[in-house]
Image (cartoon, rainbow, N blue to C red; front, side, top):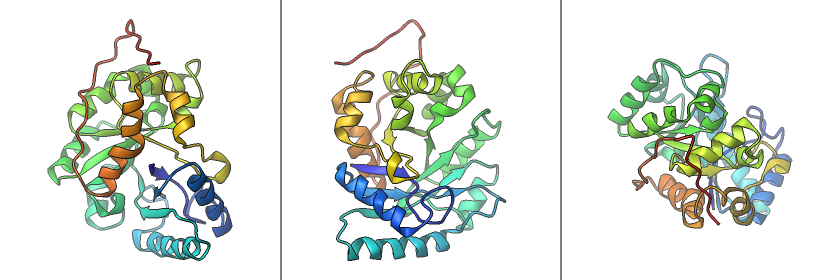
Length: 255
């Protein structure tokens, strides 16, 4: 598996506090069948978050530790970028990183609102040949109320990553229910851990199939966990299914 959203770098933001905690995360990921992790430290404009070069230095130190301890996890660098009107400028100034220097970038939306400038950001990124991947949009209150907001973004060229932990919440939770709706309606392209500690690293094939298999096919889950993320880190084009507008009366279950 390839985990495109994980906070594994030590001492960067709200991830592990030291190298030993990062090592434990890597061990957990390896035991769960993950081969590659994209380290995605947060970046919020104006909040003092670390630059790409600083994160790269921390990553290289961690990779040396993994090599010395014979932990066979490849770690690549990206960012989880909180969307801002200046996203394009930050990218051009190398303040933020695409995933493994590819044409894919992980973008975080606010929890409670959808910025009015989001269409312009999608358009500008696509004009530069870059695909925005929206991180865990199932947590956004506006999308919870109207999942078809994402349908429109996908039609404009955006991609979607959901957290496995969101699906674990179940259909009685609004976040869990929304994640299921997005899966049912072909509005998901990646499932990732968004793990911040070893105890929260839940991504595994068996566990994902158990949790997410109620909403989509095994073939799709393999695509979300391996095929699509692998294409991202290799800077290849994705072939995605046509999204389906959410209809409250429609229910889809896979067994």
